[in-house]
Image 1 (cartoon, helix red, strand yellow):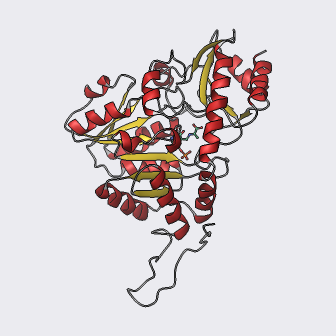
Image 2 (cartoon, helix red, strand yellow):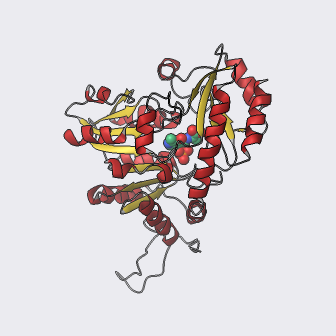
Image 3 (cartoon, protein in one colour):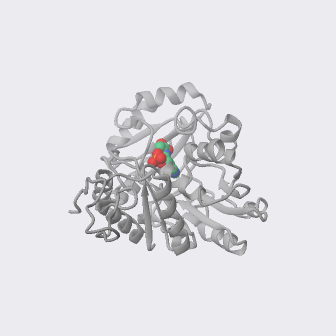
Length: 358
Ligand code: P1T
C-alpha cells in the first residue's frame, strides 16, 4: 500500500540537491500517488489535490484575471455559486448563470471577455444533463476554456476530457472517497500550460490535501467501480419506486426516458448514477421536512456519494446560499428532497421511503 508520508519536509543531500521533494505544500509522495491515480482515471496527464472541492474550484477561477467573464450552469452546488458570487465577483470576475440543458443558450452570453465555461453535469440538485461535447465545440470555436465538475458522475460513468473538456474537477469528498470520511478536491487536465498554472496556484495559495486524506481517497478509489455499479442499480430501483408514488410529483433522475436530456446522458455516461431528487404533490416545505425526519435508513445529512444513503433538503441545506428567485428558476422548490442512494439492500431503502411517505 502507498505509505502515508506524514511529513512536512524532506532532508536534502546538499544545497540545491534534493531527492525530488522539498516541502509538503509543494509536493508530497502520498499526494503525488493520488494525483497520478486520478489523472489516469480521467485520461489526463496531470492531477492536483486540494483541501476541498471548493478549494479546487477556487484554483480554476484564480487562473483568470479581473475583467474576465465566466459562463456557468444555472443549477449548481450552492457552495460553488457562493464562491463565484461572494468571493470572486468582488475581484472583478463576472459570472453569467445559464440554463445549459439547451447548449445554444450559452452562445448568447459569450463576448470577448468570456474566458471559461463552467459545467456541472449531472447538476446538483436537479440532475440536469449538459452535453459536454456540444459545450466543447462552442468553447473551442471561441477560444474559451471548458471545465467540468464531474463529482456526480465520477470517471467510472463519464470522462469529460474525452468529450473535449480542458479541466475536470471533483469533490473527492463524495464518490471518489466513497466513505464520508474525507473532505478533498481534485483537478485534472491534459493541457501542459493549464497544469503549470494549476500547480503554481496550488503551491502559492496552499490549499493542499493532507497525506492521510490522500491515503483514504486512494483506498476509496480501489472500490469505485464496484460501488458505482451498485449505486446505479439501487438508484434505478429507488427512482422507479418514487415515480409511481401518489404523493410524489416529479422525480429527477437521468435514467428515465422522459428526462429531457436522457439521450445525451446515454451518449456521454456509462450509467445514470445514484443521485435522485424529487418534489411532493402540494409542494409544502413542512411535508419535505417531515419526510426527511421520518426516514431511518437514509440519514439526514449534507454531502453525498458515500456507501450509506443520505437525504437532504436543498432549500434549507446545500442550496440555502442561492436566493429563492434564482433557485426556483431551476426547480429547487420548497418540497424538493435530494437522495444520495447508497449501496445497502435496495428493498430496505424502498421500504424506508414507503414508510416515510406514509
Ligand atoms: O464540499 P467540497 O468538497 O468543498 O465540494 C464542493 C462541491 C463541488 N461540486 C459539487 C457538485 C458538490 O456537490 C460539492 C459539495 N456538495 C455538497 C456538500 C452537497 O451536499 O451537495
